[in-house]
Amino acid sequence: MEIFWNTIAQYNEATWWTQLLITAAGILLTTQLYRKPTLWAKRSMKIYMVFLNGWISVVYYMMYCGARGHHHILAIFWGVIAVLWLWDLFTGYTPFERNPKYKVLVGVLYAMPFLYPLLSWARGMEFPMMTTTVMPCSVAVFTIGLLLAFSRRVNLLVILFLCHWALIAFSKVYIYKIPEDLLLASATPSTESFYAAQHGRTQLVRLTQRYRACHLSVLQELL
Image: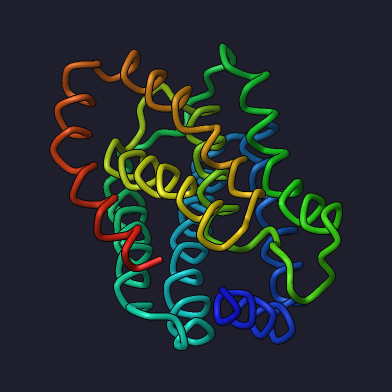
């Protein structure tokens, strides 16, 4: 657990200003999708998601989490999500068409990345040894909220990866004493049931049952 928090502290000390810029860019691009959902705005968001997930893979895991066991496997995990967004950028599979039905839930999910540092501060932690808005779980919950807001058609593989990541948040709460990850874990049931309704419950249940056991067992061991 000490290694885990030390790597977070090193990451925050070295990248806090970049994290602020990344967060600001995410707010700006998300706002643009709501106000002027042009083709350029949609492509810009996908480029941002490629960068954001690539950042988690390369900068967070490869550069600053080298002291953790099997960090390269987790880097590959987030690298795959970045590649999925890159594929989406060129194919245009996710059209980012607004679905206002879940706007209350979406608002809660959008707020969660900012609740991570607030909860860390509330339980007595101080910068740099605290969670921030540009970390794996914060990025995951933001992505879930974004796709839920624009959910006419989404990349199911991205959702499947993020749902698996959300499920292992339960183990991190116990192993690394991170109650903040209850935020992401709490998003899992509603997200899976929503996408099951949108894209076919049978298909999602089949995919989840096939891959969940494998992903959870491996990732829980790595974390």
